[in-house]
Length: 207
Image 1 (spheres, rainbow, N blue to C red):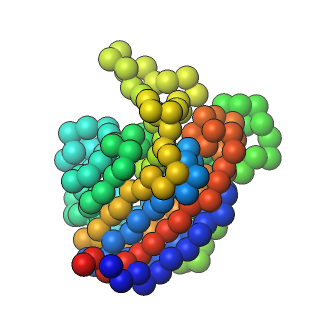
Image 2 (spheres, helix red, strand yellow):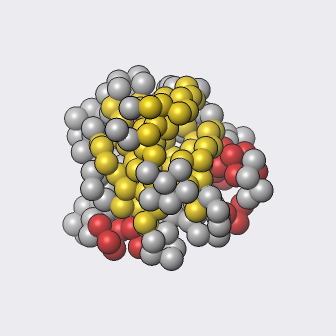
Image 3 (cartoon, rainbow, N blue to C red):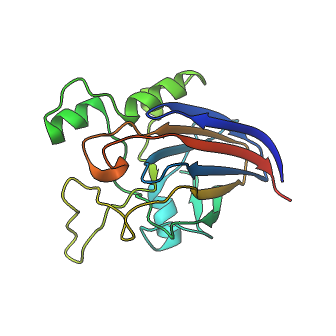
């Protein structure tokens, strides 16, 4: 494969980039048990962006994995998951953490989260608060039981103990895509095992 961009994103930091049609984006959890909040937009018209209801209706499941497509609010494919080493344990309903939700849920003040990272990343592309929509949380598990109840505080460890070092997801761009990522700084629930760590992001041409 021909890697065109490779970045190590430090614990709790944002990242943004453009993925051209046909290119692949790979997100690797370098040390394991790290949550990664993910948004994507049509890079040429950011008003078109990831849409959770369309994506989940098309998939027929809350657990996205290899072969599933992330759809836009116009029901067009944005990205397709082509590899997933953790087998679908990615949250699609919990949204991003924030300073406000950390205070609401955990009683912790002045504790920024992924919303603040998204705002930092979006600002680089002339976007802002109005452009944040419910996102995908890779490597995060939010079980929904039969009566519709969510796990306490939403996030619990994955059934196998969590993502492992070098676990990854890989997505193919179906249009020119603006990707905005927060390498989650959360320390108040189990999604990062209380200790955020670094991730690697690669953009490459498929063989």
